[in-house]
Length: 413
Ligand SMILES: Cc1cc2nc3c(=O)[nH]c(=O)nc-3n(C[C@H](O)[C@H](O)[C@H](O)COP(=O)(O)OP(=O)(O)OC[C@H]3O[C@@H](n4cnc5c(N)ncnc54)[C@H](O)[C@@H]3O)c2cc1C
Image 1 (spheres, rainbow, N blue to C red):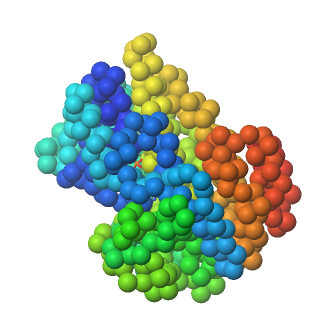
Image 2 (tube, helix red, strand yellow):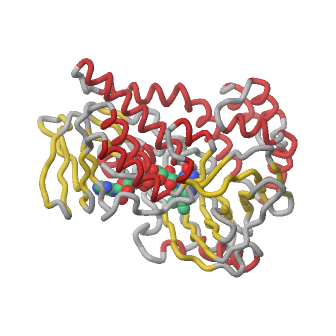
Image 3 (cartoon, rainbow, N blue to C red):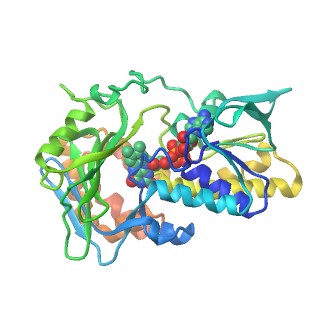
């Protein structure tokens, strides 16, 4: 269910492995909603066989602006790119179709079917009519809505304070989630080697989160704001729209730009660091439905791709034994844990530090990043850090980080 990065990748992978697979997408086109900045490390393209032509300009620089401190680095080679989000999803779905997958667009999964306590299928409704379908495995890839994952109780439902469906959600102070504009007539800064990703932190632009300007071409950018932790409140907090307005009015890169798309993701279920177990008998949740996104930055496309591949491996294992129980399908959870478990656990702690910090503490954190240096930070981000990288990072953490937190981080080494 769902043709986002997770569902589209899984559909392709299963069709390629000669499974009978059906993808049901609520929107009228696979590719919609075009809701993501979709920044990703350069190696995502090779690992997941995505043509480089489906990306915007290469990014070589990173600038993190705190209340008064900044971290500015230009790397000697490109480290990231922004995917053409809509085009990548369409590419994956078209590939899936070429391998024999079936796809229903404009059609919504409405509920799960359980028979004698066993998950056996789903009901659907929409352009392709109304009906029921049965399968050996149902995969929830419906993104943050996590339709079935929430209904099955895998995600504890934390009721948001405000209605995430309401049109003025982002005009209210203190709500979680993210929105961005895709803007034209921008003037993105270019360094010696290429474009910069800019991140803005602190109470002026994004308390409990960050704002960003990510360039796609020499005159277009994706720029937005997120509140990663809606429980972190500051006095006289403004709305995310107000914080973005300030950035828009003040930053020369976007001062004269205008939006041609708005991308929205209101806060819904939030399990920081992903579900440790996203499987049941005959069921797997992948991507944002299992909250697999990177805890500090919310980077979720790459996580969705990994999660989809692990789900395909688990389903393949189940086919071998004709056993679609949790016992076999939880191979997905094990593969995820092996590759990303520790990294996501560490990131969850960094999330707690970063999004509960006041302005002075954010500045201290940025100073610490400068001491650690980009090469080490990037290795750690990609889960390729050595023990020495890790120790260097923990050793340089600012003094306000509690001993208890440091102990937890050392334990995860
Ligand atoms: C503003 C913003 C900026 C972001 N920036 C980045 C970034 O720079 N880098 C990065 O890696 N990630 C980023 N992310 C996160 C990233 O976009 C998500 O993690 C990723 O899209 C998750 O993929 P998914 O397939 O799990 O879910 P989704 O992309 O949400 O896809 C879910 C799909 O399921 C469909 N669906 C939902 N309900 C049903 C239903 N009942 N029946 C059928 N279909 C259904 C939806 O229409 C959708 O197509 C950003 C997100 C936002 C909102």
